[in-house]
Length: 172
Image (cartoon, rainbow, N blue to C red):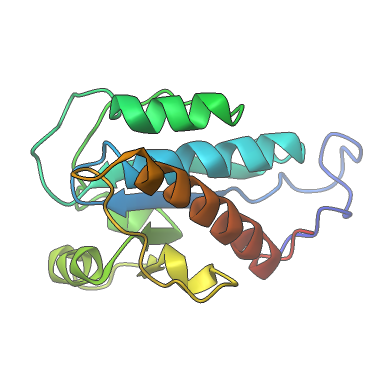
């Protein structure tokens, strides 16, 4: 994979354009977990100066909240941690399976739904984002019906998974 220490096309005009890694985060409704994961990941790559090397989005497996803003508790959790969040909920499309390199979901139900939705011959790697959690928490639980603490735990878990996923891609 691309190394953050390799020369970029900006510093070396003869080098090819850097490859953009495309990442889609997915949960059920696209208003809590996946939007938070998207915001945390975008913030992490921007802080590293890698914003040009990633295309990041999020979507839901269901259409319940299409067009809605993220849940206010997700937005507040990100805000208090200095992470900007701006998104309108959308549903996963067939094109997503061709467009994104990685489709990272939050739980086993999302994983099953994505595998059922995926067209034959798709090129995306589909896996649970929690598989990157160094604490071993594979499932990023849906905080929607619970108290604020669930959103705080999700933020911490998304942060851990983001760091580990970036390391897995070859970024320190």
